[in-house]
Amino acid sequence: MIDIPPLEKQKLIAEIAALSQREQQIMEKLAQKRKTYIDAVLMPKTVNAKYLKQK
Image 1 (cartoon, rainbow, N blue to C red):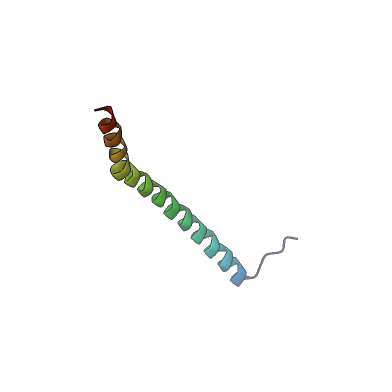
Image 2: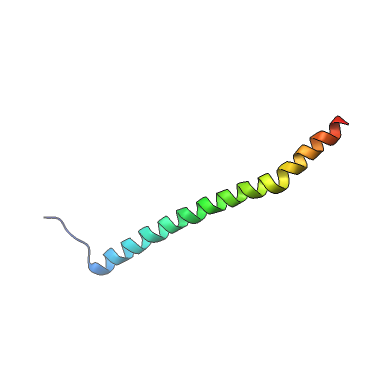
């Protein structure tokens, strides 16, 4: 016989699973936005600094 948790506990487990999945999606978006920011803002400054040193 398999014990099944009470319905309220099942709902909490499902909610935690959904929140965990949402957190993962947000973290992936954050990582992508961070990369975009670095590429757009910081990398050109690095390239310009290297260019200026060569002159």
